[in-house]
Image (cartoon, rainbow, N blue to C red; front, side):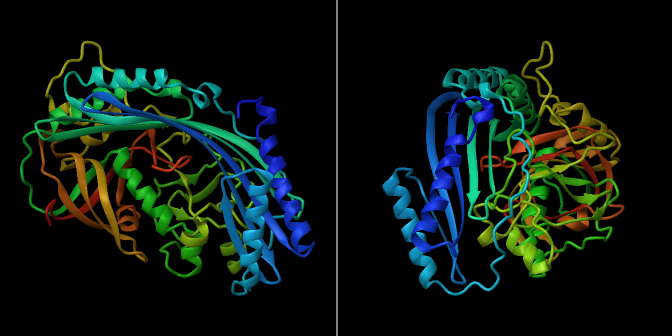
Length: 481
């Protein structure tokens, strides 16, 4: 795994090529095969009750094979790279290919094409030890200043290679780190989270201070009647919008099946909205599961929908080219953008820190101003006459995929804003809202100037967004209904 960057994936590429050759030997030259070999090293330090209670590390290998034989397509995977293990995998997939239903929509193999060199990655992150993660946990706990805390710090490293029987091959590697923590007091919770390419860029103390400050500011909430309110959504809440837009809107399979709201060429969003999927960040690989080279893809350009994501199958159905978005679940769920950025106002889409460092002399105060969390969000709040500041959304469920009407709950802090100031904490509310409508032309009043990258629960997946000030958000009841 460690090796020089130029050699990254050499062993994996040799294994992938061996599997392709084995398919040809066993099934003949008419068989089409593609193979991806991925080695993953992941480590997790988890804490609860302000104490580390689990430190785990895992190293695994995944060999994924897809074969097209006599008009039929079958796929399988294995975690053994011995000669016997690879032979068993190939025989199993070939056996399935001989009896499975015909596949008239087979798009063919990815042709040989140049692949961008693997993005710069951080060896210190890839090979970080438990002491380094524990130090960040300690900083988080100390900054929470006596509040009960829980969460995790994780690091990951992937090396992957691809080969197919059309002569195409690719290799690369990626590293990432993330932290997600919660602080609790008096029944109120505050959270802070961050995803980075370098472990050294995680600010454990800043995250802990922010989570604690938001928890203290969220105590003694009041009831508020449901209705439509102007809102400022913090980046964690905006990330839920991006995730659902990715799964249900810019998904090429859903678009081909006419189950997506996306309409390329139409100004479906406010002009402040530009969405770019960027798989070439250091935490991404330069090719997808089918070997198609990865590249940044603009999905919404200044409010106008410009593209959806495709793997080779959804692209072939529409007579277009794959955008390089095949992944392990695309055969079932469709190709989706998994590194989606909402570009901040007046800036390139460059991730900023998820929180400021601990203010000098900060103590466990209870100022409602601490609910805002950062100057960028504070600026949006200051220009809202009356509305709600929303920290986070959760338990979101899609009610209507075509219009992307979603219901869910607020959590980890909800506050009333009056005359540009946070005045009181509010009990969590249920909402029912169409995400595209909430971002429609004229609905986005202001976009923050700094983006925060937030982790997903899947390695290599993240969502990056600034805070947003929206004209309206539909709250339909309390948290209990």
